[in-house]
Amino acid sequence: PYSEPSERKFEWLSKTLPQRGDILLYAGCTAPLREQAIIKSAVEVFEKSGIKLAYDRNEQCCGGILWRIGLWDDAIEVAKRNAETIRSSGAKTLITPCPGCLQILKKEYPDWGLSLDTEILHFVEYYAKLIDEGKLKFKEKAKEKKRRVAWHDPCHLGRALGIYEEPRKVLENIPGIEVVELKRSKENAFCCGAGGGAISAYPEFTKSTSKDRLLEVIEHDVEILVTECPFCLLAFRRALDDVTFETGKKLLITSLSELILDTLQ
Image 1 (tube, rainbow, N blue to C red):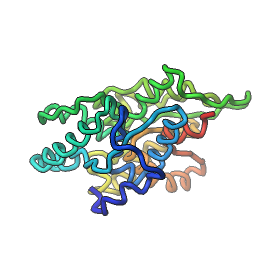
Image 2 (cartoon, helix red, strand yellow; image 1 turned 30 degrees about the vertical axis):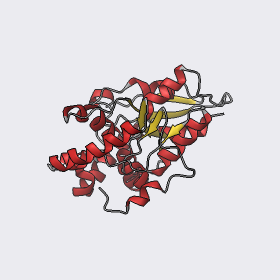
Image 3 (tube, one colour; image 1 turned 90 degrees about the vertical axis):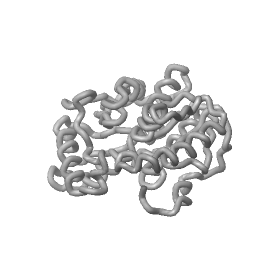
């Protein structure tokens, strides 16, 4: 989708991961090409939690971009190759950082007649599962003023798939933070502006929309905005300098994976 050499998708890899295993990482395109910190942090979190990941460099684009611009036959051909790679991994669970990929893999592949024979989860769902299993061990924070943290609901993760509680559950289990619910959240969450191809076709519209969302976040006196969508993170970071200049207030934007890694024992 970014017209870049496919080898760039593997720059985040600091070590070789096996191609086969019970838990397969599906990186997608935007995270490894534009927001590598999500995957790098997640891999470290999983390692510290005793989770053995598999990853196959033959992974294809999910096909979502082709499908959304009307190249349906091409999308299905890409998806078929992707499905075969995923099935050959022998994975019982597939995890991904990209809500857009998740929606395609989980909802569209079955409609296209493709079965992956695996459980499909977003990172936030898997983190919530690790908390239930007692595998995420956080540092204890001294009794100091808690950092005010808000969660931004990505459109594909929230309205498309109904995944709202898992990221909030994870945040509520991290010591030293106070979770702030934004006025427009969950089903009524405000889009970052990147969806539907807008970030490529109408970058100024995306930036304006992201600024509106960030201004709303600052109004809640939030110190850290957390989300787990590479598109949302990319859009917000492009708009952050303008918002900081206009308001004079600092706001940290981070992925949930980075926040977890920073607070693990």
